[in-house]
Length: 251
Image 1 (tube, rainbow, N blue to C red):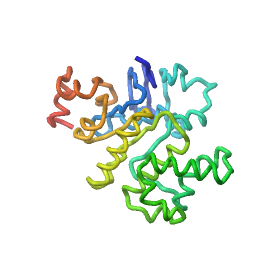
Image 2 (cartoon, helix red, strand yellow; image 1 turned 30 degrees about the vertical axis):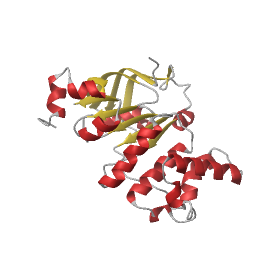
Image 3 (tube, rainbow, N blue to C red; image 1 turned 60 degrees about the horizontal axis):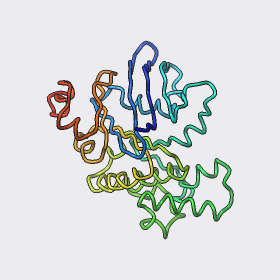
Image 4 (tube, rainbow, N blue to C red; image 1 turned 90 degrees about the vertical axis):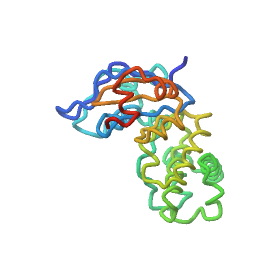
């Protein structure tokens, strides 16, 4: 099976504190992989290794290999800007820029040199339709993005990522700050997006992981304990730690 990412012997430390150790994992294209585990187990750190966001943390050190399309993204010749264009990120809390809805989505393409107004309009419209937001905002594109509800803001942030035409979307607990209705909209959206994109999502919700993901990886104390297709991991986990976590015995 083709892989989107292949991670080998990954270790990540913040100063003397080891956050991840000996991580070996394959992530598959056009699917949703959920990363589960208790707080502080390394899920978000792992997610950030996939587009080198940890580079922004001065005390962070990384060893091992992370292959994206067979290229080690930690090689010196890797173009980090191009990598982050291909591997987009959506954060836990919606973080729209204090500008219009249109300009939020157009921000990335403009930074990449797209200046033609009609082209920008097409990019923005496509991204908003893909994020299931277009019908709700099409008549107020000049309104401030901060006027949107929390769920709408998160879909706007997804649209902003999609406007860069990535192959992979990383999501760090994207629904944790949302109500159940907004969460359902995001989950429905992700199920549709995985037809075209590779999605890797950190979630603390066992129910969410079971509902939306194709594959699940269970992290604990900086280690990858078990990974499998989601149905197998939740119904027939191989490790007792995994069973204890998904049944609520700890964590």
